[in-house]
Length: 135
Image 1: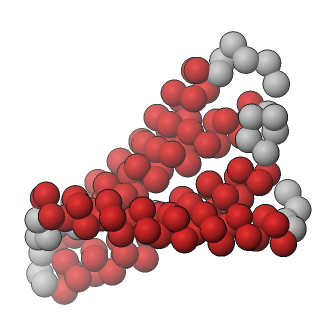
Image 2: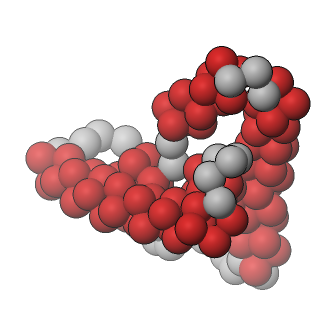
């Protein structure tokens, strides 16, 4: 896929929207579940993984369903700034530094397992929905 200035503008716009969505969801989840565990980041990353799996399945059906402009905006822009490995990494390190080894391990295991599972689920659901569609 070749990127133009237009594609880069879509990535920039999507990134702004994804970053705002991440902050809003993270803060909402943290208010609801507390800050003793990075629940907000976990929820953001799992929902982002679910959505990227769904987008990947749509993209595999054919360019008519998901043109390169939509991929640039949603997958690279919105979801690229919405999900956050850097926050996950720092929060896991902070848990380790506080001596909360079990919580740090739980954060790693939950994040990896739930995010990979969510990506697979998103992909499978969309693939199933479009299984009768011809490209």
